[in-house]
Structures are given as C-alpha cells and as structure tokens.
Image (tube, rainbow, N blue to C red; front, side, top):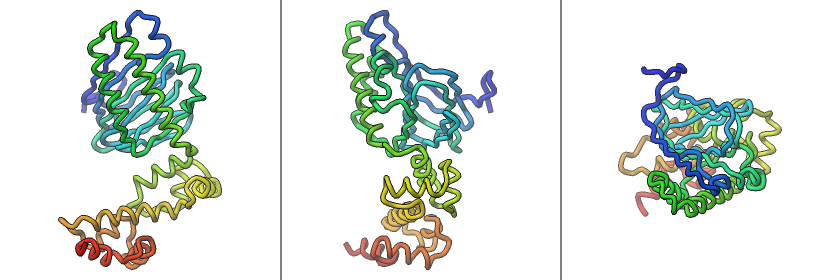
Length: 283
C-alpha cells in the first residue's frame, strides 16, 4: 500500500479548487478551498492551526475527527462543522471515505463565529440538504471559471452558505457527549451494548448521560438503543422481496434471544414481528 512522505496511507483521489483574486471583498468572506475526496483507509490529515471554518460531509464510509482531546465519529450521510484551530481528520472505515469539504474564512466569520453557533464542533446527522448541494455545485463551477465580474455574487453565495450552516448548527444543539452517544449507538446497535459501553464512548458518567437523554430526547440511553433496534428490525421486515427469517432479523438488530426480540418488537410496534410482516403483505 502506497504511503506519502509523512508515512500516511496515500489518498486515492482528490479534487481541490481555490481562487484568490486580489480584491478587497475577499477579506470579508471567502472560500479557502473546496473539494471532493476519496480517502483510503488509514489516511489522515493533521491541521496544526487553521484560520477557517471547516465543513466536511461524508458521502460513503466514515471519518474520525480529533479535536480538543475529544474523538468524534462522522458516519456516511453525516457532516461536521469544525471551528478554527487544531484538528486531525482520518479515514478509518474498511472501504475508506468519500466526502466533500470546504473552508470559509473572513471578517464576517471572525466577528460572528460564536453568535452563529459555529465556535464548537457540531455533528450534523442525516445531512441531506438540497439547498447546500445547489450552493456547493454553483460555487464549484464559479471557482473553476474564476471570473472577476462574479466576485460579489460569489461572496453572496458563500454568505448564504454560511447562514445555512449556522441554521443547521442551531438545529443540532445537543451537548457533545450526547452527540457522541447517539452516533455510537446508531453505528453499533447490532452489537451487544451496555450502558457502560455507551458512557465510555460518550466520554461521561452514567448520571450525566442519562440526564442528557432525558432532557433533550425525553428518553434514556437504553430506551434509545432499543428504539433504534426496533426501527431497524421493522425496515428488515418490510423487505418482502428477499424476506429474512425472524431469527436472523433479531440477530441483525442486536438481539440474540428471539423471544425477547419478539416481546420488545410487540411493545414498540403493537404487533409481533410475524404479525407486522403479515400486515404488510395484506395491505
């Protein structure tokens, strides 16, 4: 496997675009870079000190962020906002990581970072935003063309993008410990998990985590784990083209005991797994 001069596993593919015209508007708000990347498993980048807001959206695989002594997992379909400073990003998934990213800087950002709720790491789960995709594609094209007469429009689109990311961050006001717990459960519900396992990955004690789940989600860590499993089991049962045995669905949902699984499924959905499947075929 190829490695670069820093000993990292070489990335497989990367397309980065930059544009720095000598115009005053660039000091107010600008893109340091924007790009699309395919990172091999084990590839990493360590930023000692950035002056920009870093946004990373993972399309396939998973990425890990280390910042401020904390570790964050960003699975496929999620995005992360990383404030200026030191950070390390790595691709740890078996198949690597496909993502797109951009960096925003300028006086507008510097003076409003906290007010826009962008001064701390924020994980955006299930990040599928058509407005973001349209802005990204438009800026991608404009960055390639580098037309001086479009600088003001370019700045306006960056500002619109910044407001959108700020709005998304406000919609995810969960504490970091709760975000880590939710991410860990969502990625590992098929395993046998205990409350202690979740607390270790969240980086806090039981009482703290239980309070956060109750306060923000009106739930508990174990109840959230069970609900995640039952929702996943329902999706498997809804696959009528290649129906799986109930026992296998229970195992894939993290329940080794089929009777326990059936009782929990009935409690959550109001029907047993067999009744649930039958109701789908008769509707």
